[in-house]
Length: 277
Image (cartoon, rainbow, N blue to C red; front, side, top):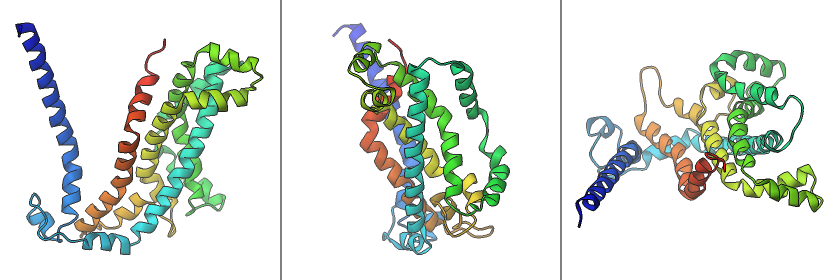
């Protein structure tokens, strides 16, 4: 074995060891929360790094009894509706910016992308006032519009890059076959941008699923999402850490499952729009 080959192998082993260490460091808080959620109350703080002895599901029962299961269903419904609307509107806008020529396309795209500079906290009070005047305060309908609006700029930016990569020859052939703009969008670009759509859906779904300040302000009634319901386990002077950790596992489990199922498409989607041919 030559010295250069040995050096390459040592570098590869060092890189792999570093990546394994980083992955372990990233996964360790999730693993600790999962094990700690199976402990009895005091064991979480007095013996934080020991395995649960014996394991208990009482913390999960407490979380479910507090309504966390209903809040989980609320979050699933709200996230699904918002992500579907984001993908529909963002793909239409991205198709227009990537494939069509019209007056004002550049300024309009700049105006849309400038929405990424608006912080959520700056519009909480105006959104609550508008929702109250419209009679939507406390309703999940008060969150759909803001969630979709805040998700559109980044979604349009990413999908525009994916749609721009589709060869013009495919578009020309579709138009020769009689495809209108909508049919071209639906039958040609949407299937070819599947990786990008999955990536955008996961990214925006994670943000909507975990969003807290807007849901806290707008949902004033019994209809609550998971982050808002999870915060109820921690008061000013007391915190039920077992229920909090069980709730965190319930919150994180769907996101981890989605990542493991779609990780191949997510990686392809992240890299697909990075380089133009």
